[in-house]
Amino acid sequence: MQGKHMEKILVLLHTEADGSLGRAARECLSLAASLGKYDLAISGADASAAANSAEGSAERILCIAADEFAVPRSSTDSAAAEMLIRTSGATLVLAPGTSRWSRALPMAAARLGGVIDTHAVGLEVVGDSIQVKRWFYRQRIEGTVARSGSPWIVVIEPGAFTATEATPRQATIETQSLELAVSPRTTVEGTISTAAGEQTIRPDAALLFVAGAGWTKKQKDGQVHFADAADRIQTFVHKSKCSLGSSKSLVDLSSEGEAVLPFLTHLHQVGQTGSTPRHRKGLATCCHGEEPHVVGWRFINERRAVNLDPNCGWARGKADVLYVADAFEVMKELNALLD
Amino acid sequence: MPYQIIVCGGIAPDPLQTLEPAMGPAGPALKNEMMLPAVFDPWAAHALYEAAHLARQFPGSSIRVVTLAPKAKLQQVMMTVAQKLPFELIPIDGPGGGFTDAVEVSKVLAQAISAIPGIDMSQFLLFGGWESATRGSGCVIPMVAARLGIEDCFLAVDELKIEDGALVIKERVEGGLLQVSRCSAPPAALAWATGSLPEPPNHPQTGMANMRAMMPALQRAKPAGLTGEGFSVPQATLPAQQRQTQVVKDKPAAEISRELLEWIKG
Image (cartoon, helix red, strand yellow):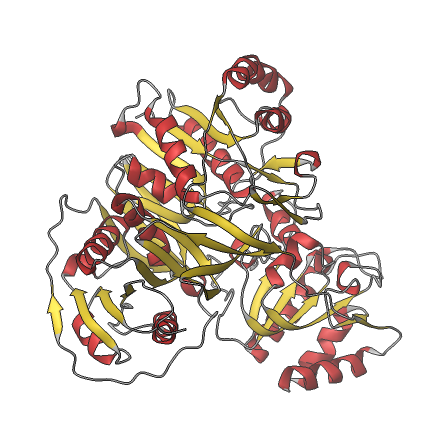
């Protein structure tokens, strides 16, 4: 793609809490390298050190590393991003779609009079311009976006590109200190895991395991078996170290006051109003595979489902294999095999 | 202290509908878009329920909903939403689909909010959904906040508590974690994820009272005047992801589990 366009590219990154560059940042660097020459800007704790560890083809490096920028916070992050973009003079800004940048970069775009597109899963050079590939209607329609405004901030969806291995070098770093117009009014108190202390979506897991509402329904004996359901699900999750997801219907039961599996929260929800995780494989149990849920499976490559209904959504081209079977029995056997 | 809460939210096709893009002279749209049943955007709806919850705790608080949508369609959706809680509707007539520019939409919303008389920034909270079910960009609320001069913006919010006047907010971040932040006071912008509140039951009397003010507002709704300048969607297609599903029946659970184990480990 090199040389086919006239954009001045800036890769805009932030450091993680430990001062390193995350995987999404390295994916962004990899994409930028495929486009040609670029400048690199990093904000956050130990930004200078992170710049030295970054992939080595950047032409110019800008850093903002004051203490105020160590924590994820919209006011300071957006101010840092605004200054870095303005200083670089970039017309195209590539940034990883982390929660931190997703919060701050739209604000920076608005203040710069620029434009922004998020969830980019591809970049194409068409003639002399760049088009961004992204999804619409929660992964139900894929399309391309073209723009003429600048600076154009393109927020790259994590997992959409391959991360390069770091090729460290001692870079010449131009460090700029940022003066805030106002003192931050927000303090970050830290992070907490979900109330139940149970894992949710684990991006690095190979398998997504989805527990649907069927786990809470009456079984063959006419009774519900919450304890058995919870035991089978949690045992499988712990033994297989998979990512745990759920459908909206199961998660919603708790807010409607019905007895549910207490470790499943809205953070587990996969689908239209939940997450769209990326895993190599996905196993759905007691879930009907309705479209609003399955849109969250867009980036699950191999899909299998266990459900008693042979006409459920999974059977209609949404899964590779549907086992028409009792998930209680199958998971009990599977857990025994995992010992 | 009472709060002035403004909720930005659009409409979206009912999630159970089949969606198909159709290219027209002005770019893509959904096939039969005006015929599709619509709902209030799911995450914006959560924002609205959270706004009602907050307003109940602090008497004197007000809730306004600023919506950019085709007004005929919006009127249908409001017949249901208006029954949930009392609020004032500020409609803007324009396209509500996913193929519009988030940047331009944010300008229109910010202009509409700026034109509301009596906004006190020391009581002002901007609410909205984290991402719409149409465009799904997740950047409209932060951009509206920036255009209104609000510096404290929170994305994917699941909880808001008021402690001694400060806003204590939990946001979803990577790894299934929640980031806890404390903002000293309004103004602030909160783009809500699911939150923790159930959908309020319908209350017909509230609906009738709301609609009495909403109908004239809908009739007076100003056109958004979106031009789409500098923005285009040259291509929109359905993903070709239909699978040839193998339906396995009458297989013992033990055999299925062995097959699954092999697949998981493979």
